[in-house]
Image 1 (cartoon, rainbow, N blue to C red):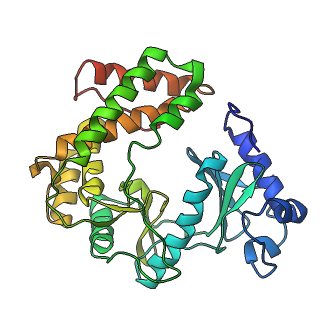
Image 2: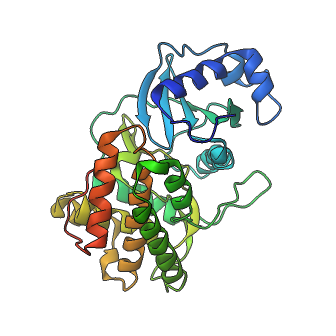
Length: 320
């Protein structure tokens, strides 16, 4: 198991990837009974040394070999979420929603980290835009609740649920007063969000609806990063782009393209400010977990906290 306080770095993730590639390690650490018919396991050892890092955040995402993507989760706490993400991919396939597909039907726990295997998508033909995201959200928001013995059980959108873990991972790298401030803010927005009356019907949501989680291939836009799928207010998915407009420098014209393609602007809803405030709180705490190993993350965390303390919604935040 990963020791508490161990920084989640590319080096650490590559070590887990190498362990996952060893058949003996796979058999010993599989979170379920490994099947020799599982192509991700039986295909042998993905070349960990030659793997290309695609992203490093909650997960380290590696392109491995010719057609595989491997995700290594930050900690064992994320195993249940990783298992659910794999089931969600299968459920979306059943409903013909264009989304990334799992290459293995299970998540595995390797050296204290959840590991999942995915079919690599074709190279994008162009960057994803707001209209691409809006079209996919319309498909997701039209889905019924999952049902059936193999269907995933979608939790409520626990937007603020990771705050405590992210602050704990930040440890002494951040000011304790800032951590206490974010905990108080979390509690206030959690209570306010629970009292909201939605405009749209509740149901399945993506949970992190941004163009970066869409890839446009030869056959069109495809939804990726399914780990925050949940069932809740559909407005959760729409507030993300509103915050991008206000905090992250999204061109207002691009935002207007998004709302036109979706068919509604969430800013017309009285509850928008509450969900925006909750997401700002979570986004600030999320950056904190990177602070121990990355000075740029610490600087960005301090920028975000200061803007929240000052009540200044116009301070620019930078993606991390």
